[in-house]
Length: 268
Ligand code: KIV
Ligand code: NA
Image (cartoon, rainbow, N blue to C red; front, top):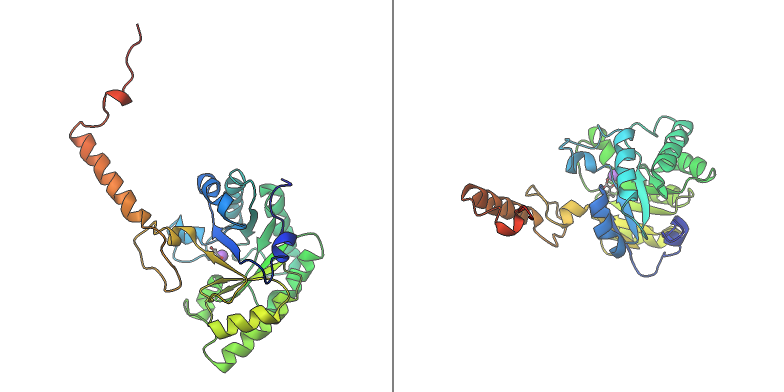
């Protein structure tokens, strides 16, 4: 729709009021978050958050397209970005293009996101030159969990800083309209935000970025698992879901629910 924020408008927010981004995986959550956000991300984190997977590596293109469609049904004004899942873009820029086209055509979203440093810059240039807006993602890259040996923040040594500096420079100048920077130290996030011409959107990357993103379920405390240091819990919905289920169970067992007002009566 013409009313949604475009990737071009997001790019123009560089250095201004911070860009507000949250994840959304479903229509009802997209409806609730839309008016408050600039950007809604259909993240492949849905594999872990919704499907109980160990990592994002098993998430498929079909899953991302199904959830992308669901989110699009609930959005009026936010720019919607759908993650390209593991295996759908790394092999070649042609494969990346074909799968990005599927995501755009089948969901109607505004852009795709893919993880990668300097090795993915050529792919992003190929896509953006051919009509596909791309959000980059550098720093901690969850799809690389098996080669990285876990989920660790990056930028703690000179070698790591040198690598992520090359990544920020390459992706920041690849044609991407903005770059997610995940899990890195404040000094580097500030340096990269100053150095690259497009907005940086941080997650566990300090307040120095041009915007922030969190996984909504983390931010809402929708489950009771481990919460990483960079997440702020704005609510404890998981506890409230448990309390509501307990109240319901008690009332069903005591026959307090359903009451008269929940009960159909014959009219005549
Ligand atoms: O999959 C995801 O939710 C993400 C964000 C947290 C950046 O990639
Ligand atoms: Na992701």
